[in-house]
Image 1 (cartoon, one colour):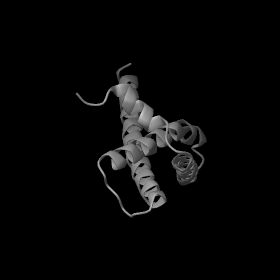
Image 2: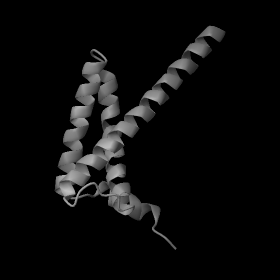
Image 3: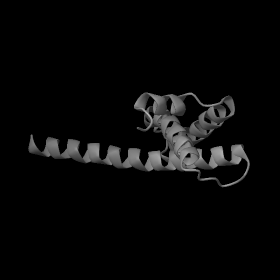
Amino acid sequence: MGTSFINIVYQIVFVDQMTFVLVILLSVIAAFAFREALEGASLTAICFFPFFILGALVSVYLFTKLQVFMSPEQPVNTVAASIFGIVITLIFLLVFKRAIIYLSDSIHRLV
């Protein structure tokens, strides 16, 4: 019948220690780079940080489940999947942030 939602969440969240450390390190680097690129958007970088982690973990899970491998070595695959997940998450969050700003400005013009 397929895998239950709880089982999928369990597989995404409870990864091995190496994967978790790599995901956290790459997410910290992404949040820091984001803060530096936007000249001091510290609060935005802090708010985006947990989503970077979640995006990287989901990406690692999907790459493993779909058997997309860049290299025979697991750390290389983890880093590649994590970076892909963080980039996709960043794009999604920036589009979402722009949509919220646009809606907020539209509402303020009507009032």
